[in-house]
Image (tube, rainbow, N blue to C red):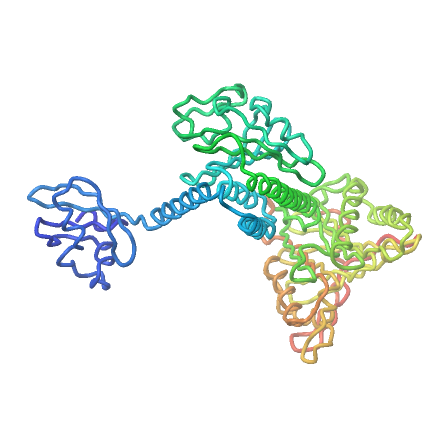
Amino acid sequence: MMWEDSPYPMLTIDATGVVAQANEAARLLLAGTADGDRTPRTAPGWLTRAHDGHGAVEGEIGGRTFQAHPVHSGGGRIVWWLVDVTEQRAEAAARQAERERAASATETGTRRGEREWAACMVEAANELLPSLNLDRCLDSVARLAVRYLADVALVVLPVSGRKQLLTWYEPDRGVLRESVSVDPRTMPGLAEALQSLPPASVHWIDPAELPAWLLPHRPDEHHPDEHRPDEHRPDEHRPDGVTSVAVTTLPGHGLPVGALVLLRHGRPAAFEAGEQVFLRLFTALAGSAISAARLYTEQGTITEVLMAELLPPPTPRLQGVELAALYRPAGPAERVGGDFYDVHAVAGTGGESLVVLGDVAGKGLEAAVLTGRIRNTLRALLPLADDHRCVLERLNSVLVNDGDPTRYVTLVLVSFERHGRRVSLRVTSAGHPPPLIIRNDGRVETVPSEGTLIGAIEDVSSVTTPVVLEPGETCLLYSDGIIEARGGPLGQEFFGEERLCEQLLMCAGMPPEALAERVQMLASQWVGGGEHDDMAVVAITAPRDSPPNGPAQDTSAQGASSQGTPAQGVPAQGTPAHGTPAQGTPTGGTR
């Protein structure tokens, strides 16, 4: 059967209601065939009774509504295609209920007393005030306006320039939203409503003067663009029975936030006394709710834009080295904090790249703001990256001039460049935990680079140490949130550099991504569910493959001298491990 795998249930039924064929979807659907292997003997009664018809029919199977479409196949047999329309029918029933509710409100509107209108206001307040979602708030305003005052409602929200955000609600069609570029003056009373202050008056206009852009267009209709803002919709395309149109202001916090347009069927261009009071209170409530939601949305957008500058950057792919970086803020609900890292593909006058990892004093948003300032200052100092000491002194001057000794930062700078199969590094620490080198033979070395933290005192010192990585070896940078993670069996012991080095003994040759994840996982497991500081990890690995242009001879003096005398290795696994000095001789000095 060629339609056996069709997602729609399909049945072939003869004139007596006997099922001749059924695909898998039909067998699973019909009662008594849960195993999906047997063809049901008889079709549902409503489907059998429709055998002599010529159109689609509907009925229930298993509590859901299906629409059956017939295809006559000869010999008195019909192939029925079943389509589940349960959701569509539920939506239609909801729209019908809303129409009936609106019609009931229309009939009883003049008979409502003060208590009824007060109850309506309470209902409107309960629906509008809890939400700070702008779209949901606009939808609710339009729905409530139709429920109590009109047959079709439109909320006009100015965006920028001539741009207007239009939100319609019509019971038959639900909520529609569209952004259009139009001149509000093309509709009588709208420009005034968008500019007037409370108490706002109601403008009644002739339905014949409605511009084309005001009404929701159907997909098959022409929709006017901004070049024809004054075009009017043909009469046959207007909602049936519109006899009056009202335009009023939605007052915001000091200024109008938008306008409300009400289309009414079979009612005069006037409000009853109760409707007038309700309209005045409702528009004030709706305007306040829209203003609050719009302000919240704008603040959220601004926060996201500013936050993007504070979040750790994605790790770039650099030619000649492998990089991995991870960051975990102190709090579960925080996205930024005092730890940061940056990777600059080009820094200085040569071909070196630069990695910066830092830890700002403090936590949370205040630390993140200082972090952003430091990152921007370092970005401006990139042309000076050939001299790490110069970069640190300039940054220190900027922070010291703020006059706040509590706003300081610890840093480690690593400039690197590939020479042949090796990667040459220049490492400078400024009050920061020194980087660790994981050698191929399992040794873990501490880079002997020390310096003063930045931003606390006027004179700073720094030492720059050259290091060479053989293929597969890694330089690991980390913040003090790793080694100062407090936890363990008693819950108060630091993770510590010694324990970190012991764990790194087993990580020789590990890819940088796996190494960074391993280090952060170890610190997180040590903390458990307790509090912790920000954690940042960066791993720089010399690739095992050959350079893109083939193996190159590393004959530079620095490349030869930085190898130096092999340092003592870290004791074998199981022996207490203390990081040993990395190969290379420190350069630089103190000022």
